[in-house]
Length: 231
Image (cartoon, rainbow, N blue to C red):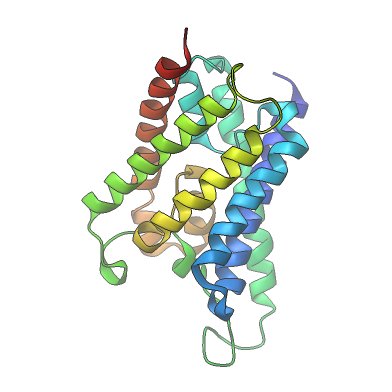
């Protein structure tokens, strides 16, 4: 496995979690709301797909890596390295934002301090979120499966060349609009792990679901995508 591919996955996931954390911590509570978070994640994947996707394939997500194995598009022998690089990239981005938050001059959010906490931006179910574990599980499986169908189709030899990152980024934007109100939108175990580690408590206790459901969705979507696109 090439070290540059692992570096690309680290950097791409770092950028993805930077977009996610930055928008959710600062832009959303300042009044930009749901659209800011959805745009940030979609644009992050779009730009990094063009920037480093040609080096590593632009997975930036353990569920995508496993889904592409199911689609016959990725060597399973490289999966562990990719997933480790993705998780570390996400954690590094979250640590950067923990340093930024440590410099806040007051505790927020309040009417005069417009920022969120890591607990508020973590994925979860039940309690204040208002949706059951089953609802969260179904949502994450379905949206991740749809995401993999888009990825496999957009990167097939029959698809228009050069547009895959655009299709994938727009799909991620749409899927986040649907799922942020339910689970805070995971689709990505690396994205879920990063803020949960810093939040601790309930986000950490519920993190298992945001690994299991996206991986199941990724396998299902990868298999469907393979079937749809094979001759």
